[in-house]
Amino acid sequence: MKKPILFALDDDPQVLRAVTRDLKSKYQKEYRILRTSSPKEGLEVLVELKKKGETIALFLVDQRMPEMLGVAFLEEAKKHFPDAKKVLLTAYSDTDAAIKAINDVQLDYYLSKPWNPPEEKLYPVLDDLLDIWQLNYSPEFDGLKVLGYQYNPHTHDIKDFLSSNLFPFQWLDIETSNDAKEIATLHNVSAKDMPVVSFPNGECLKNPSITELAERLGLNVTAKETLYDVVIIGAGPSGLAAAVYGGSEGLKTLLIERKAPGGQAGTSSRIENYLGFPNGLSGQELTHRAITQAKRFGIEFLSPKEVMSIQTQDNYKHIALDDGSEVRTKSIVVATGVNYRKLPAEGVEQYTGAGIYYGSSMTEAQACQNQEVYIVGGGNSAGQSAVYLSNFAKNVYITIRRDDLSSSMSQYLIDQIKAIDNITLLANTTITKVKGDGERLSHLQLENTKTAEVTTVPARALFIFIGSRPYTDWITLDILKNERGFLETGRDLLKYNNFTKIWKQKREPFLLETCSPGIFASGDVRAGAMNRVASAVGEGSMAIKFVHEYLAEI
Image (cartoon, rainbow, N blue to C red):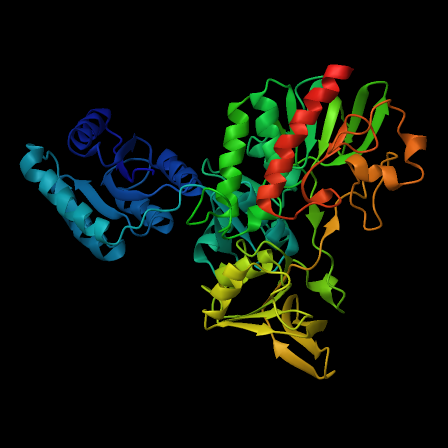
């Protein structure tokens, strides 16, 4: 946490040195001491300090300076740091000016020079003023700040990216936050520049792309090596497990993620059925542990970076990335997981990111305070989201097509939901239309699938967790998929008539190997996967075993 500042100003170098000496002698453990001999320079410094989110506890300013009188300086300084205590250093002849300043700039005290001994004439005064100041002092957030409009889709994307990548940040709504308006004024940003990301060093990024933001945050967006033993595509639980085992077993390993590590599991507010964590853990906590572990083993992590295609040449795989670059590798583990299906209701596209969200309930939870919130879906992710959102929302409604949750949700979650008063299950219900007031969601049209009754209800947020569509559309290589787009692997490939036309190896495919030798699939993207975090982790680690066997034969 940054220390508050004691700011000293005097145009006499000898006096300024004495002031600084006495301030440091008494206060440097709890405060930073800044000094300047120029009022104009001091005002410029104040602007920079404000941009950096610094806090000034007290000004100690000389009255008679040729550039500017001390009272005039304090009048300007007050605009930037209105809560700071103000002390004027005066000669005996300046007493009248000091008394006038008490009313003009709310001067807290004036001290006559010299103030020796400071133990009697300086410290008692400053101690009292600083004690009073500390009573109302709340340390300012020392980190990234995101300014923008709550229901702007790009603002949501930035908040979601920062949250998913475990960057702490403070959200400031430009329409309601005075701090946001102050930062916008300091940096001369307007509505068209939103969203804005403000950094602790005073820098602002105006309406940045996710890639620009990632580069500024120091994330790796360029591959460092020319050839890898294994490239893992997707940093969900399965991809992270593969990265940990690949790195620990000495393989030159690259992990590529197009959004943020953790996948759908990373957005879960609580995973309570994962082995070894009897009290449960959040998806973010699991992701943070896994990324830290993988990096400790020396793996390279590329994010956010999207894979556009894979091509094979001899025993090498060429991976084309969205920035036009290419990565070469001997083997690949595809662990891209699944995406939630789009909700087939009228108006959904218009309000996506502006009240309608696919997953990501943790990012927007604060915006749901005392609101009516709806969730579509009956799986564990939907249940975990409902439990979490119930801490913020006035009411949470889970809409499902079935009669109950028993066929799709774990019993421990069903029991939790039944015990929470402000969660209501709407069975046999579909959402057919969404409506908004201006740029944000306001109402939903619900239809009972048994009675055909249609009702319109108020809703400020809708979180969608329906079905699973494998993220495999980008794979144009001749790799067999089932009718739903999931990647087929191992002996299941033998049931396809065209398998022998594609597979030209003398051996059968390894258990997690696709019909392209050296390209493996693990986790939810694989046909027949268990769709549980633990099984995804198991498959990711198992994939590296088969990678070793493949590398041994080429």
